[in-house]
Image (tube, rainbow, N blue to C red):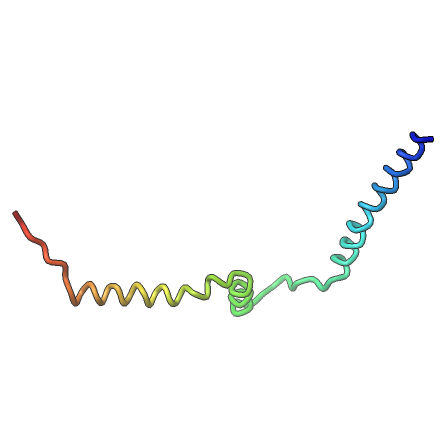
Length: 81
């Protein structure tokens, strides 16, 4: 009796675990697929949407430009011995 109960519980567990996978697979199949071709503007926007840290790139460029300007204004004094 205990053995039959264990086998039945294992089968029920297997069925219960496979149900979410079947549901998610069905939902993924019914979702709208992304277009296969993109314009450059769409590709850039999609890239920025999926990688928001890339939006900070212009700020890094401005920072480096500012550091280069400061380096030109105040050159480092070098002393020879």
